[in-house]
Amino acid sequence: MKLARDRSAHTARPRRSRTRAAAASLSVCAALALTACGGSGSDNLAEQANEGGNKGYVAGDGSVSEYAPGERGEPVEFEAKMFDGSTVSAEDLRGETTVLNFWYAGCAPCRAEAPDLVSLAEEYEGDAQFMGVNLRDQQATSEAFERTFEIPYESASDLNGEVLLALSDYVPPQAVPTTLVLDSEGRVAARVLGKADHSTLDALIKDTVAETV
Image (cartoon, rainbow, N blue to C red):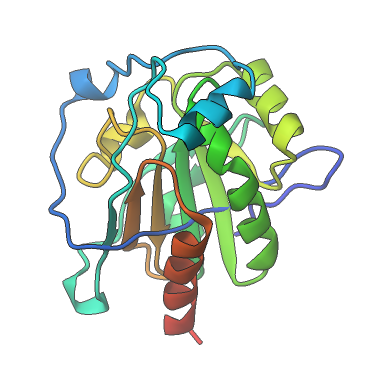
């Protein structure tokens, strides 16, 4: 299933991670208790993230986990309501490497990593699909962010925390952004907690894509 949009509108796709961290189980209450800064924010937020300062958001520590094919769990299951009104399920994404990025507009590291996600989505077009999962924003705020950074893929609205809860073994609610790379079977092949570094994410995606070639 293609999650891309044309430049005049918008489009979406997903990615992955490395180390060997154990996944943490989380409750619905925790999932809905995201207490980071809201609003679209300015790009001073991205500068703060690159400088390593904590300015009201809660982020991951940048740790990377990569799972060998034989060590991956079952395919993930979720259903997401996209901002354009359509619904996308985890099953719809299978058959291709998928990069899922959990974000919101007022999150400093989310803004800092956006240009890298854009360039990687364009680089892997046809080999991997990208999809955002927005945890806090109304549609207008999300779309303003996407216009600012020229995001070439679409995002789901997860204000109710359903996608976050479904993936709580891999996505701690306090670690925003988090990026998952799913293999063609829909299993988590890699995870990045916190701001995704371009070269690291590139390697994680490349490894996962190579499995299906």
